Structure formats: C-alpha cells, structure tokens
Amino acid sequence: MAKKIINEENLEKADVVLVSAPYEKTASSHKGTVYGPEKVVECLDTQIEFFDRKFKVEANNFVKISHLYLENLETLSPAETLEEIKSQAEKLIQKNKFVFLLGGEHSVSIGVFQALAKKYNPKDVTILQIDAHCDLRKDDSDYSDTPSDLAHSTVMRHASALGFPLVQVGIRTYSKDEYEYFTDKKNKVTVFEWGKKIPETKKILKSIKTKYLYLTIDVDGFDPAYMPGTGTPVQGGLEWWYGLELIEKAITKSELIGADIVEVSPIPESVLTEYGAAQLCYTIIANKFQKKFK
Ligand SMILES: [Mn+2]
Image 1 (cartoon, rainbow, N blue to C red):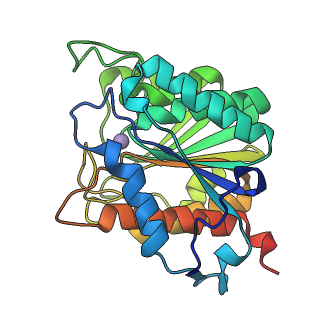
Image 2: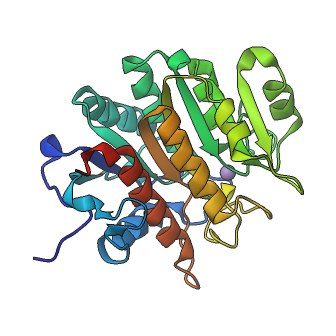
C-alpha cells in the first residue's frame, strides 16, 4: 500500500485528528464551503509532497494523523451543529489529541473554542486569526433577514466572550460595531490591518503574550491570488510566504494547542485553494510536531 498523510485509522492511536465539518448554514451566500473539507482531504491524500523542505524529513513517518468526518451536519440547526462539534472536539482534547478542524464556514470554530475553554483557561490561549474579516459581529442582522448570533461573521465575538485574547491579521473590512468592539481595550483584540503598508511579523509575534496558541485560518485572509476559492473574497491579503513565516514563528513562540482552516469553497477553475489549505495543514502539523523528527 502506498503511504498516506492521513496514516492512522484508529483515532485512539493518533497524534492529530483532522475533523471535517462540512457545514455552511449561516454563510452570507451559499458558495460551497460545504465541499471544502473533502477537497482538502483529497489533496492531503493525493497531492501534497510528504517530504518537508524545512525539516528535511517525511513528517508522516513520525506523526500519526487520523480523520474524523462529521456527517449530517447540514441536517442540524446551527446550535445543534456547534454542540456536535464541541462534544466531538471535547472527547478528542480530553484524550490529548491535537484537533485540526477543517471547515465549512467559519462558525464551526466556535465548537472547538468552547471545547478548549473546558480544558484551558482562555486567558492563557491567544487565538491567532488570519482573516480578511474581524468576524466580531454580535449578530448578522445588518445583512440578513433572518438574523443569527451564530453566523460566521460572529465567530470571533464568541471567542472573545469566552475570554480568549485575539490577534487578528490580514483584516481589510469591518463594520462600525466591529470597529467599536476591537478598539475597546478591555476586549483584548489586537488587529493588524492590511493595506499599502503591512506590519513586520515580529510586531505581530510580540502581541502574542500567552503560553498557548490556537490558529484559526480563514483562507480569505490570504491574498485571493493564492486562495481564490472562498465565499467572501477581499482584495489584497497576506502573501503566501509571509503567512507561512508568521505561522511557523508563532508556533515556535507559543505552544500550539489546536488549529482550523475554514471557508474553503472549491471552484471548478482552480484547485489552488484546497491545495493551499492542505499544504498549510501539513506544514502546521510538521512545525507542531518537529520534536518527533529524530
Ligand atoms: Mn473571512
């Protein structure tokens, strides 16, 4: 049998569990993020090179990676979906598995945030978010006729309410309410906006002050040239190597306790987005588990 990146069938034996959450109930417009996880997993299975250029090893020889596909999420309500993700993540986290969530729309991350908040004090965990959007809305009443406080544009407001300090990178659009929220110091949100000038990575790293780190990557945080397949693209995002450098350095600075990649919405003309997401996923795992490479 040929080797695979997803190389461990038994979740109990895994170091990392990729959790596929194909869900997009509250997305601003149905753009196909429900197909994101299976395309990313397909790329991991068939496209991504095993050999890691930084560490000069085949990371999948050292790290056991399993896959858990959450079925039927589209038949559940938003609240039921988050409950399902939370309870699955909680079980894995209790068994000391590294949960790597693949979305789906960004709201799926809320379930993992809630699960992490049971094991860790949120004050000790910075959530580093790569995203074009703050996702700090209280609800989506300004653009939806059926408002929900579980919409993908509210995900980081939930994280903030749980007590996690937030560092947001790549931000280039926000509402008045979001602006008021993140400029209020007591909310512990540090925003690095993207524009003509971009901050040095060391400035971003300096704003991560906790022992632990969680990474949430909305692929629209990257420039659409690298990640074109996403529901709400915005011009002028993170350059690929900049993003990788930031991620690698952040993992070196604080202990990474979980990660997600969300809002992959595959488009027929290009596999760049799912390929990029799969490469990020494998690279993050390699950096996280680099001590095993001996
Ligand atoms: Mn976004």
